[in-house]
Image (cartoon, rainbow, N blue to C red; front, side):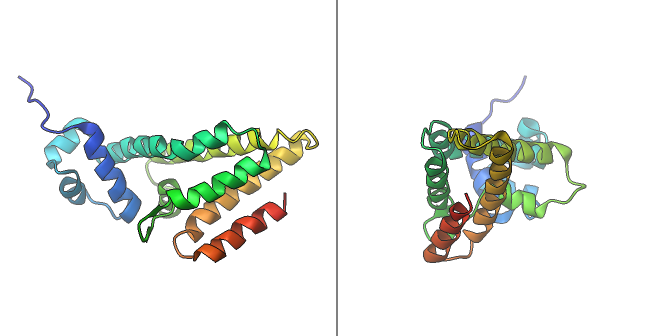
Length: 187
């Protein structure tokens, strides 16, 4: 007879996500996950397979959380202004009190190498690709732009978003505002 779980998966995954976001994928051990999630190693393996499985589930939880700002971008009819609003909203999203966390996806992209688990890399690239698609959708609202310009600018904004994520961990508010405003001068 299978044992009944003594925990709620969504709650333990939220805790794991916070740990990965603070420490990174590579610096988070299964032992650390046990402590943070409040469940034992057997339960982790039984429910999620391994550390990679916990991370994939954590990334799904992160996607749900960031929907609070990506939905605004997805539903925006303001073109470049909607994208700029997204950049500013990200700054608030990436903070927790005085802690500047950046973006879980960007943090992980920066730390994993080419030989890391393909499933993680695929998930991260899909997430990033979806953000670029949202930039593309908003840029296409300006009918004076041709498809080539829209694609180039969406890619530029994607790279700028990665830069903002890293900058948000160390720059002050004025520096971050200057960074964002400079990005949009180019558009």
